[in-house]
Image 1 (cartoon, rainbow, N blue to C red):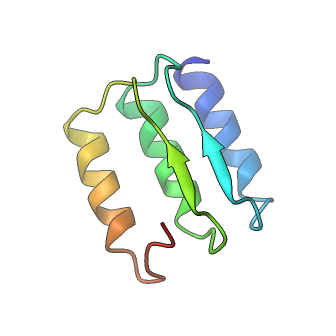
Image 2: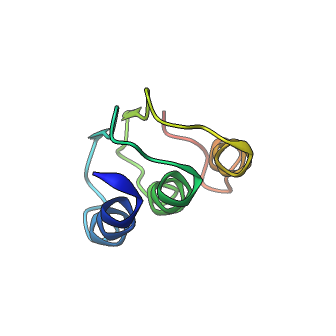
Amino acid sequence: MGDEMAEQLAQGIKELPMLYYINVSDNNLTDRGMKALLSSVTHMPMLYMLNMSDNVIGGETAFALQAFLHSENGCPL
């Protein structure tokens, strides 16, 4: 998939608040794509599974993940 497609996916899923499962494992994502996805899923109350395994989780992604887990709406995972 790569980062560019992940950014497009992140924009698209904003229109799908009832989405409950996202699997982007092993998609050659880096901080750029992962941050975009984490930003979008923050407002998805039905999300119960977010699989980001086998991608690069760098420092920026770690901070974005921390923000997601401590978000105002609470992490639904």
